[in-house]
Amino acid sequence: MSHLPIGVFDSGVGGLSVLNALQGELPHERFVYFADTGHAPYGERGDAFVAERTRTVARHLLDRHRIKALVVACNTATAAAIHLLRAEHPALPLVGVEPALKPAVATSRTGHVAVIATRVTLESRKFEALRNSLAAQAAFSIVPCDGLAGAIERSDLAEIAALSQRYLAAAGTFGNAPGQIDTLVLGCTHYPFIAAELRRHTGDAVRFIDTGAPVAQQTRRLLAQAGQLAEEGNGAVELVCSAAPDALDAAAARWLARPAGRAATAEVSAPATA
Image (cartoon, rainbow, N blue to C red; front, side):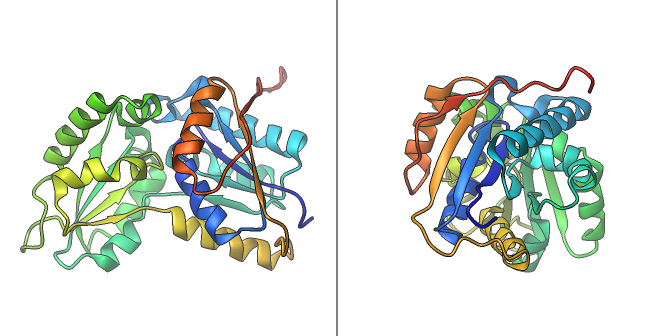
């Protein structure tokens, strides 16, 4: 099965930040990236909707593309549905993403950490459990960023700038002095793409933590354990989306370090009996 592709899934273009890390860690692998752009953004949808879309896309990637592993490169989808995918596909190597609170706590010197993410992610039971497990180790400033992922999808620079300013101001005071926030968790895979804009509001001393590299490393570990690592070849990326292929092409050309093929459109619907 080593020649089969790895599926990478997000509601839109944000998961390209994770795919970029995967390409660097696994240069010989083939990837199928599915962007559910026809139903994005997930971060402002309900759990039931996100869970059903995630299950439907996973089935499509397994049936149509015969993927050997699946990376759910979306914090919202991971929070809403990763447990369902593990139950439905127990033999499939699965990797999800979640706000990187543990690395942030380990990194912070002031003990003050800000977390920006979608509202659905931050209100999930999965995130609440993670935060509670670390409550004694750091003070967290939690900011739901309504609209920010959508603005990044649209490349709306004015809205990105306005929302970044608003949400980081709400987080608190950034810096290295006692009581200040010295670590910022980028809790949505879209947010690494606007790191420069976010940096304007935090200053250079604040450390940003995202999940791309840890996810890529975990994917390698799981494939190695299963004996499914591709050991040769140049690797490749197939892009698929449920809407707006030109926007996905443009985002891939802008944000992936290695080229991808042109995006195809696939109408992926839940079975009538589901």
